Length: 206
Image (cartoon, rainbow, N blue to C red; front, side):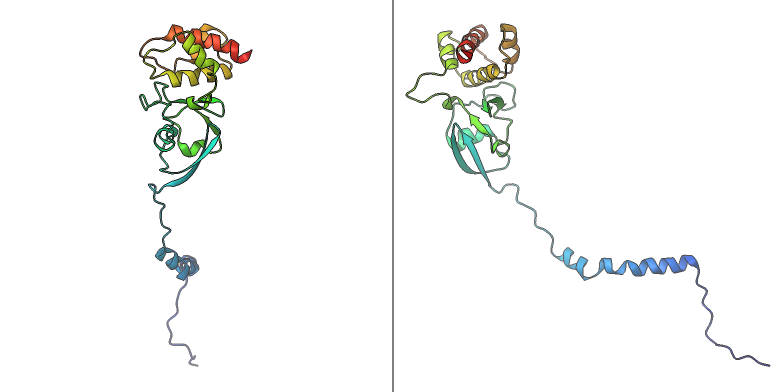
């Protein structure tokens, strides 16, 4: 007896074909309207040259400035605040002429970014004493021992010497020379500088 049958050709579905179709279907929502919208609205990049609102505490006063993010403490002090005691020598952190105190510890102004100094107290040579007051013991010791000639490196030498004592590195002449070695004096007043640090240590710790 003849048997009725469907004229539609049979389709052979393999496991690989089934899984491939499933994965393709599952991936459709990932490229839907949400992703297309995100691609149509890219996040704008911040302008690296746009001024940044920076607050610096210098010698007990707070200064608010709009600075390039790359501005150093040294340039902020000299060009934006008007404190020119800290000198720009090598501008590579090798001469020490730009030394300031950052929360009481020595820091090279030319290598320290102003944005990184926010929230810390910066002390410069101008902040050691009032204009009508007595000299700081270290300043007086430099005068007493003639520990400078041209004077260009002197602000950095004095700030570094104060930090050297406060850090506990001035117990003897060898230690003073070692821990003051980052401050260069082209006039070669090194023996007098060591003597000044030794005198000021007695006064500062006494």
